[in-house]
Image 1 (tube, rainbow, N blue to C red):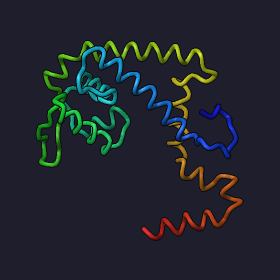
Image 2: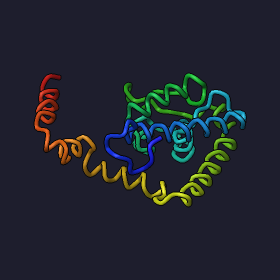
Image 3: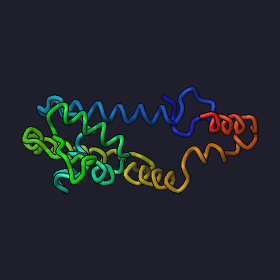
Image 4: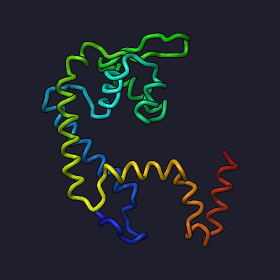
Length: 178
């Protein structure tokens, strides 16, 4: 893998490196969950389970806001969880609304899910102590910076893009085609 701060012409881009790190962490967490005896349970389910424990049954839109993901991402994860028996969907106040409820199967796993969450938080804090920039501070700072100014805008306004008007023209044309 490319070291942080590597040249811009590296074969490994920042996004690839970030995905690789997240995949490594996710795979290791999945292994811990499997060793704890949580068949079919994925690490990405924990945020939803924890939100449902804290909030009680809620519509998918509320759940998405609570865990800071898009409605589509929450809906896809909830669908995977429902297919595995961890949540069930019930009609809400109107026909379009679906309310997410934890199942008894998920509730039975709560001690294991909470143990993994606590161990992961502890391991993350220890990892942070090794890093020059703690992830617990860096990742929220990145998210806030991107909320202020999306990455697409940063690409369009980058020094490189300004030196390559053909690149900007191609992007503008691409936006007008679709």
